[in-house]
Length: 581
Image (cartoon, one colour):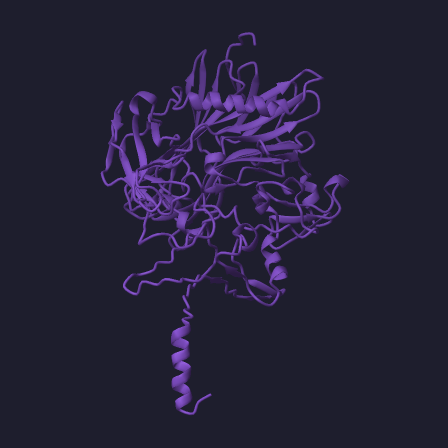
């Protein structure tokens, strides 16, 4: 595109960043994105919404002795940090003062918005800070949300195989939708477009693991076709590690960049800050990318492919060089770690086994596996190649433990030494050897240890409650109401799995759930695993290991019951001699 000089327009209660490709309007001093003008469309955001409900940062918090709550973050001070031919960077800050105790989250927050010359979109990031003399609080969630125009954006794309035309938000209203087991799930009974009738809409069906949330968004398929995308070039500022799930895009049309949440985990991933604890963290930058296709013959869905290409370009540019905040650590200030991960399991192979496609990451020092619950600081993850080699780049200075886990092997690895990252360092760790927990050879195993239950039996959904996207789909476990199918499959007796004859892909239900007896009554379930040991070594211990992919409001009890024929016969004879039958 031809060169257009960056311009910043101050309009009193609003400020506009304009690079000739896009015009972004923000309220002043709130720092709410109220308008995005692009490709002939005056505003991509929902003009029917109040300005505060279009594009914003928010959080959910709680305090000691106070309820806290949902907070759309509004700045109280506006400042131009940088304005030149190449970059505009704006700051919207909110300072906490003691008089706000119990009324506002005790954080200093600095929201930044950046527009670069020639860039089709804009960036946003924020710095949160809690001073040690401030009161205790907890932070349940923080994110960025964009609400797009519902009459324009109808096609949503989350991954290559999870994209579709979506219903309208009006279809979820009481006169058109029927609320199901929880408010987010609605059965569309009278949608405006008949093609969606009988489907379930539920934003949780479009969640992804952190590692897979790189680009997602919406397409306006009408000419001129336009794409709106949230690109996350790094996961370092997200909590919970690569397998933690978070929301992405959903009916609204809404696009979210979630940095921290208790979804799917509850209290374990709810950071609690005590009085006397200082904390500061940079979330982002996230790139809001806009693209378009003006060729009438061009498939508008090409915009998804273009967005993926842009995501790769952003990831290659990470860490960014342009953020003006000193709290954002630039490339030359970061370090790197390289090494190799091997597995030693003599019951599988007498030689070392390369950790093929293993997960290796740096997080704050702790116990093996503690990274799953770590929710305050940064994490840096990568995957090994087929030979077990790994390279982690762009690590912020600090002290870390190196953690790992490998699909196909149970347990967690932790490198004993603390790794200290300094500016510009390259640290080579010698061949790391993980020894999975073992007391002997494996006698039997159900499933595959990969921190997922996807390999187990996932039933077809109730025909009344389907999402067409997930019919014959690898993620079919995301269909609504599958937990209720257990009671239909096992109305009176619970699941019995016989080692040697049962097949976990067909005979092991993907989740152990309660049995629903009526609308208000649920019954605990007891599954059985039956197996035979023909040769028992009485001098050895036998170990049962259970790997839990996730748990919600659950209590698991495990019992081992022996049936030894010789002992039973002897007991019976003894009781006969006493005249007992």
